[in-house]
Length: 124
Image (cartoon, rainbow, N blue to C red):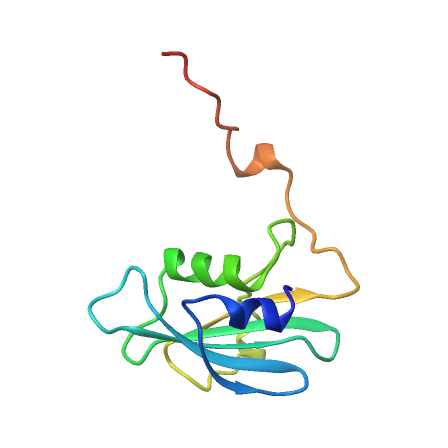
């Protein structure tokens, strides 16, 4: 995760709260309707980086989550969104999505060939 001072320095960020292990801020959605606000909580305690993103009336889209991901995390970091077993599901906000990164463990991921073919440059 990027240092909090680097995140809040971004001109799109309007800091709401700052604590020992995290920050809360708002930013306008670059893709949503007029006046839609992304509410973001970012923390890095207890061995985990965690970012929560929510809107008032809908879940964030993939492009919105990608903007926040790039704002809060370094390009080389692997981040995950989880679907936990139903018995472990906790929901405090109907329109919030979360990104997670453990500090001490590499996140396993499938080989690229299982995800899809690599993009090749087209000849003009």
